[in-house]
Amino acid sequence: MSNQNQLAMVKKDTVDVVASKVREFQERGELHFPAGYSPDNAMKSAWLILQETKDRNKRPALEICTRDSVANALLDMVVQGLNPSKKQCYFIVYGNQLVCMRSYFGTMGVTKRVTGAKSIDAAVIYEGDEVVYEMVNGRITNLVHKQKFGNINKENIIGAYCTIVIDKDNVYHELMTMDEIRQAWKKSQMWGKDQAEERKGSTHDEFKQEMAKKTVINRACKKFLNSSDDSSLLMQHINRSSEAAEEAQVQEEIQQNANSEIIDVEYEVDPEEPNQIEDQSSQQVDVNQEQMQFEHTGTGPNF
Image (cartoon, rainbow, N blue to C red; front, side, top):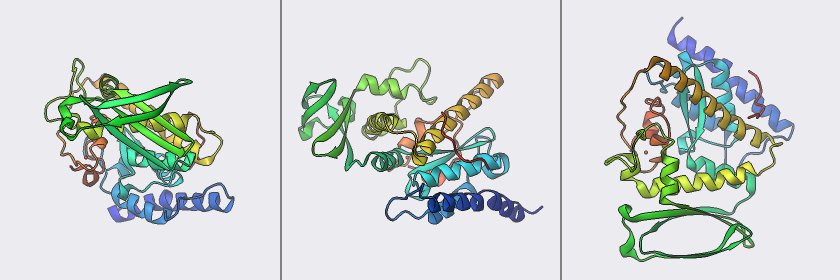
């Protein structure tokens, strides 16, 4: 069978089926997209990207991944209102499973959808900055951050915070010290076993400010999403995609440890999206290369 015929069959078994499922959800009133979001355009972008996506052994994702995992990854993307061409998500291959992973841009978008948040912003705190806040019932309130321009130096970051504004009377702050941020970074497989600080020239070093903001944004949004009602179709797919990614990562790590093979990977980093590299494991080599240059119980439908 020719490659074109094979791609046509995969498309019929995945993209076309997902599009049909999405229409069913819309007709039943279970799915509402953000203003300006086109599921058809998102799927077209995803399909083009998937044809170039490969696993760590340079094998095409559409050849080695199960049709069910491809379909579920696409459905997770659409239900969450994400578009890979806008760097809101990207596709990762773990073994024979394809997973849709949100970028922090996507996480902010989904959080706004779920909570109705008006804005989500983050800032870095440098040595010498003045940060004052109050604690009320365990929550940070009235946070005031005064900064001098001369303090801005990535080597002098002491923390970061994220502010989520629901309305004028409901503002949430998540604050992390640099030690807490590094603890989160240590979960990355790109972080060495005995490594204490950022490797010189690494993404966490070169783009430390953006990586710190990304980490605190993800933590703040995760708390809001975890406290939301799980009954909606949107929340089911948010949970399903996260759990699918975690499960696939564990299975891949088990296989790698069994093979006891160490793979060195070199990346080119896109400063517009630096978060998409070192927070993921070293298996993710050729996933969405164009996007990455210079950067349980959700019940998804069965395919």
